[in-house]
Length: 154
Length: 372
Image (cartoon, helix red, strand yellow):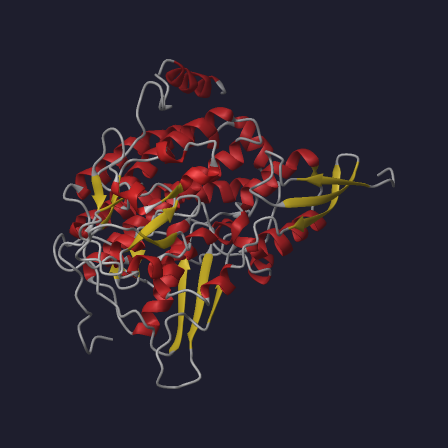
């Protein structure tokens, strides 16, 4: 009676392991939609604070950056505290100019011994992550952009 | 009975405890005389926090109320909010919601397999179930962008459009997990040792289940045909043909079998929804940042039972449109499970310490849902 189950188990004994050999042999599993580290385009950011107001975890603070930024008169840019960020993507959705995007560069930027290094200033966010990455969440994600609901329904 | 009772603590660190909850057991030898829940390890005060945040931020937070089955909490909140806004999701979004919700149910039931089979030493079933769940998590990563907390079901539809090869990807995922679930069926659910351990343990009569507030598979395991997907026919469930599995005796084995059959039915629902889904049309309505004043109730059949969200939007000025809800209250399926039902079963049956993993596992509690 139990023999049937033993035979079934044997089928699995000779299978190759399902585990992903991260990080030494394989890279982290990502898809074209994975939401991970942000990337900021400081030339298009207008410093409107929409991302700060949209953040449910209060991870975004605005920092003043000196330099030539004709579009950003106040010269304030978002900086993200990754020890608070939940990667929900509401900041990207709120950004009116598409300056803030999300990439699929996952995990590596969080592995640290120094907790202060999880705070990313605008200059850090503007730096593209080292290695391969692709932009996964941007203004282009909402194509076509949602329209207001039709009137008189329900 | 020796007459000398002993107090023993189980959890929250114990690997056999279901999630981050503790239990205080009063035992006499091997027999468990009384059991008491020790909650509070996960209390984060979500309902209060939601009163201070805008509605879209609340949705992101709501998923954290039940880690194992987050999409149904989002769906409950979404239904309540859509009622206040007076909108209905587009046709395409309704089907996508059904598919996402059923995948969430499958992932939750497969994770339950781990909580259930692991503590009774059926390690093989645990690893098969987790391998199947992993495929679902990859599907979620592909569609929603995250593995566990998806934030994909959104008031007014779904958050963004589905990828181009959604249909093929969904059917491929089902083809991958179906043989694993069939093997679990043969290798674990019909294993004589498991059957001997779970039969006639932790019985819950139908009348008691209704009286004590059981919902979901725990209620259906006792033989009561109650399923909100059939009763309310929310989203696209009205267009889909499926049956409700019920148990016969209401014991741990029946509850486990109900969950197994639900897994098959969920896969069938997903296949039907993928076939019937319109591929074009809007996926989401844009809603204003402020909520009109009013009241909304969302009711959803989650993997563990009935989830209710009651949302009240109010402001001192009757013409004002607040950004955050005035009050929101969630009703989760786990609270009655681990309080009244657990005590009832222990009081009315001779439960041994060795039966505890079967008893706790078969009720499938979700610890964060108790504390909120």
